[in-house]
Image: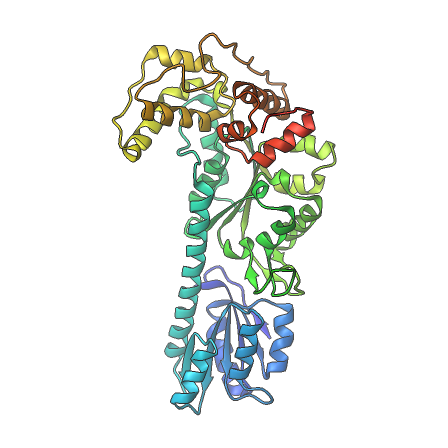
Length: 458
């Protein structure tokens, strides 16, 4: 077995297992693929290959049909039944039409007749990796569509706090450092994470977001690390996790404070060792992923309360970014309103809605508990109704007492509590509507209410 790791390799994140009983063919394929792939392992029989598969994940298997004991086609059938989802290239020196048909029925991605040239093998490997890349991109695209439904658009602003944020992002982005983004709900934490990704050397690789609060605690480990067939009830096939899909790119862990303590320990291990172990497997998969985490709760307070591991907090906050609430950058209101009008009006099929100085002054006096996300909702509702009025934003009326602006010494959690209470009050205690306006999961809001001893209407 041999391994080669080099940043210039065209398939540097891909691993290949070569299975052939001819030493000459193994040597030829090992030399050919090691120069291009991140990891190449070899085996002379199915039994040897199975031992390697128990310890190591492989993206591609290059498999001879004629092997001692079990044939390559027989083993491929077994691999598919066991849930192996990677591509397999079958090779043989004795082929007829029936053999080729059997290979394709067994789930082979390609079929090569010996002797073949280096170019033929590399073309087959490239086709497999391109298909794998397309599958990953399609998966990531579907997740992004789901994750961004109803989200805010645009990290906009020219205020002093935002200029500092932009400068910090530009400085951090080119590095591989893990980043922790903190800020109230609706301040644009995912947008900051996307900016870090798109301004980094990983920009051409996937950006994979996951909302840790939106997934049941018993499923989050499988979602992150993947699982093998039969790992738990309902696991009818193997599945790669989000760390696998994000290889070479960025994994964004939103609301990371919602992770169970048991999973926090496993996440810490992954960050330290850069390897993940799917649920129910003894196999570890190497992953090259930049992790950006976010929380709308003060993690130092969570550490003090015993709800978040201190060692994981320090590991995540290699570099920290704290996004300012909208009430602390009200000079950005005109640009934000213009941006949302420009983005939303064409989609809604309505004319743009101009604003005036009196409206902006009223906006500047409001505390914006839902931050930029709430502002977007206000603009969207105004466009639909055809004007800015006091009727479409509960709590926005001019005679409503604004929430006092916090001091610099206020803890993030205290500020968050005060703002959530304001939104709940403006919506008569209705959790569903308050969660929608705040842009957080209802489950998250219910947990916060329970912690604060607040009874709310359904």
